[in-house]
Amino acid sequence: MSSECKDESSPKQGNKHERFVYKNLGKSGLKVSNICLGGFTFGESQFALPGQSDEKLSHEIMDIFVEHGGNFFDTANVYGNGNSEKIIGTWLSKRDREQFVIATKCRFSKTVLEPKFPNCWGLSRKHIFQAVENSLSNLQSHYIDLYQMHCWDSTVPIEETLMAFNDLVRSGKILYFGVSNMKGWMLQKIVDTCKYMGLSPVLSLQQQYNLLCRESELEAFEVCEKENIGVLPWGALKSGLLTGKFKTGMAPAQNTRIRYLQDAKPFGEIGDTWEAYDKNEKYWKLMEELDLIAKAHDKTVTQVTLRWLLQKDIVTSVIIGAKRIDQLKENIGAAYGWELSSEEMGRLDAVSQYDTIKYPYRFIDMLNSK
Image (cartoon, rainbow, N blue to C red; front, top):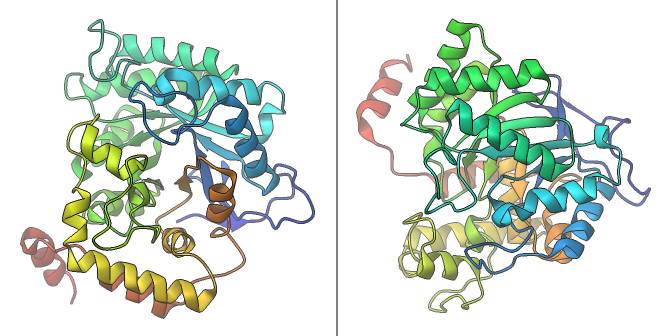
């Protein structure tokens, strides 16, 4: 999917650190570190999410990420109620802008659940142009490297949305555009429309992808593979479920993200409850396998979980979040210096395999296997 290199012109880091691996994002020449630092935890959230970091801690986390060679940051206009972009912008204003790749998103308004006005959300030309100006101001930058649709908008013709993104590329306000949270047919529709209308191509797909959520392999990732679209997984640790810190029969503490997402449901139903996982034999078999592999490498379950993603050919860069310095360093420890064997990758693939839908997926694969 993407070529790898160790770029001497990448962000400066201390001699004590190895460098990240850098990959071209999709079919572009844009090189990004194979770990991307997500800004979801930066700034106070309107949902009172646990584990948010203030500006000082966020800047410390960003500094350490760059010291280890990271050059790729992802945020959105709604993260931290808009404060995430501002925190990144303040940090960026004191550094060489050209060294870093900044990605952000549009579609939702700051009041995600109840937009105040009909045109303050969505993927209409009007809102996209409003949103990009707000993000540029927040980020204290005259351009955005990667501007992404946060989700499909069924109320707006996709041609209108894509023409707006194309015009932003032509104006220089954004350099590339990507998408997030897409079904396979949606992504293919975007690809085909861009080709037919002669518009800037979609460069990346940001999608939830982890050992507990692999359904995007069925269709969306097949489009990515055929069209050379870079995959940027979010939710890599599944709100902590893939860190190994939870034990059977022991409910997560109230200040954990998995407990909050279950109890508060700020975004609606987004996954199974802890109780469902606790009773799921397949989940515990996966955790047992992760633990065995982690011990064999003298690594943590978190690092093995991230390493599995990093070694997937379809993946360009894995988005991580960190609310503490030690979490960040643990996550970074998955990025270089060691690998899972093909046998270990196979074991994790097998134990985390989703239940295949026989028709049409298995039927079509069978007919094309000879």
